Image (cartoon, rainbow, N blue to C red; front, side, top):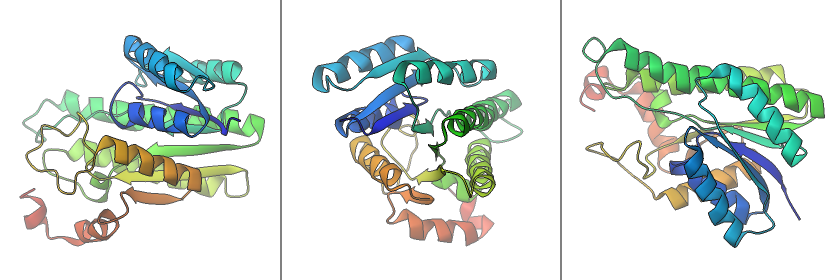
Length: 247
C-alpha cells in the first residue's frame, strides 16, 4: 500500500536521485523532475524493475523557467491523484570570489536556488491548500549558517531558502501544512567532489536514508547528519571572520 506521493526537483543526480530510490523502497509514488529527461527515464526504468508497485512519473523541468513549474506540478497531481510531499531540491553551485568571478554566475545561483525554489514551494502550497494538506521540504545547506568565501552566492541562496520556508511555516501554522528545512553537510555528490576539503563527508546512500527519515518524521529543521553538524553549525555562526576567510 502506498504511503503517498513525493515530488522531487533536481532528481537526475546526487541526493535527489538516490532519495528517489529510497522513497520508492519505502512505498511512495514518485514525481521526478530535472533538466535531463533522459536521465529521469533511466531512473524510472531502474526503479520499475525493483519496485514494480511504485508509480513513477517524470518531467523535464528547469526551475529557472519559472512559468513551467506550476503546470508541471499540476500534471503530476493529475497523474498521481494527489501530491503529499514536495521537495525543493534542485540547486547549483558556482565557486568564485565576488568581483573576480563573473557576476552572472552568482545571479545564476540565485535564480536557481532561490527563485526556482520560491516558485516551486509557492506552486506546491497552492495545490496543498486546494487539497487540504501537504508537506513542503527544502534542501538548504550548512553553508546557510555563514557566508563562505568563494561561495558567497551559494551561502546566501541556502540562507534565503531557509528563511523563506520559516515564513511559510508561520503563515500556515493553523493549516494541515508541514514545513521541513534540511541542512545537509558534505554528502558525496558531484556538486562538492572538486572541493579540497570535505569534513565529515558521508555517502549519498546514507544521506538519502537520513533525508527520508527526517521527511517521514516531519521535523521542522535538521542538519544532515544531525551529528556533528548540529554542533558545528552553532560554532560556524560565531567563528571570527579571520578563520572563515581561511576556509
